[in-house]
Image (cartoon, rainbow, N blue to C red):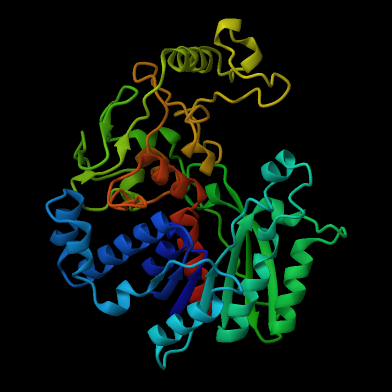
Length: 416
């Protein structure tokens, strides 16, 4: 079952499909750091399949360089990550590279979703023109060009909830426009708003999952079965060392517990290695840390969120006092889900404060990755050979949760 991943990001959607036996022919992504992450994950899967995972471990422990890691990959796998922006200026080149990679193989499936900022409710609220003139609105047309070219049996188009209401300058719904376009290309489409928390993800993340099938059949959309879970958000902190602001390691961090049961093992988040990476906390100034203590105390004692306007004047540095009252928010460990992990976490961690007042910090990239259900052996690269906490946060915040992706893959596999 061969597929292409468009707008692949760090590969959360792809990881779910790989787990279910699908074969990625190509990942197409414009961000260099995300492409490095995709290639490193490609190396992980190849080395695992060839019983040579020790090479990947050597890389994570920096016994070998990234170049040495990639040298273990066959040429076609190194070429399968295509670092180009999808669009008229690059599509011919991307097509040529995919054609070379797939040879005589057919493409059964295309997955992926264009960048969500142009459709997101937050993006539209912040933009005077409601993002109606943002060029990213039209990337669904470029997606259609890949459908037209490869005619896969199915495709999975993922995007934010805002896609349901996003409109053009003429007042047309983008969702209607893209469905009409894909119908013209030969696909019937159906969609649902899926809640990641229904599939084992410990956050309130909603995503529009639109699935297309080649032909005229309209009765094909999967009947997703919601899962029940007793797991709480505290699970994502288990086994990770306590840190103060500014502490931690970008590379190897050993676990503090050896238990092999519980949520992290059931969901394949802890999946074999005796260490993880990117458990490193942002440094914070004394003002931020004081606000964090106030926010955590208020939640722990009263189960109330901090209203920014209730802070002492000496701690208020933002001029905007009329909106974003909850700009400081605690990731409450005793709840079954937390709020959505977003790419904004790359800019500051104020919305993702660790619930342990003694640690007094925002969450680390590894903790954020666990909220997105990425396995602990998933390594997020930077643009260069140096690790980057900021780049990791951005990739994690933009990703599709792996457990949600795997549930979609399970249902697509049944249909195929």
